[in-house]
Image (cartoon, helix red, strand yellow):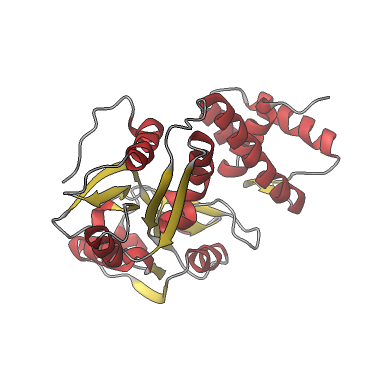
Length: 305
């Protein structure tokens, strides 16, 4: 029996939702179809991909290993369906700055696709903090940037948001708050809280906490998303982070759940930025057009500033 994309998609959905019933709802198919696909996969691979419990489906070590391959398969198929013919007319060098979160959790896949779209375009990449990126755009060190647009402060910087990533509560699997309806910051304030600080996440969090009138019980300030992920998964505390950096499994193989909150928690906005007075080069146009095609088309495009 040959591996099918259907099996891969059903496996990924089950791994991400942790329950066959939820995966089936997401995929708009029957639970039996999901179960059959997973059983077929396990038969072909000769290993168990999940352990079945009363709470749901937990990935085995073999399942976690295969999940990485499954994601690669899905991305490769998506790229094959969506990639245009390479454009060799765009050439030269483009200096691109990106903030930590964007560089680590968003850009790598798109850099690979950009290399396929524009094989003669050389991208020089720089990871930097937001304030330094703004200065670099203004003084010409950088041509364009990919960053969190909600944090920008310089009036000389033009920007446009590509997408908004919702911030949700991260909980370890089977945490009592997971059973609570209408979950709000008042409930979160009663739990040990892990505060992410990278990319000004701490300042953003303090703003919505202050507006709520509640205060988190912070047990750790850290610049590491992976530290937050592991500590939440191990039951040391909870956190509020964006979907962009969410992965359902920690490095230790423990599951993390996410829940939306009833209180207003602003989304994390990711987009492009450049010097307002800068004349766009062909390379800058190509870079911007790639992201427009990926995220904004066919929406009406407009700059935020």
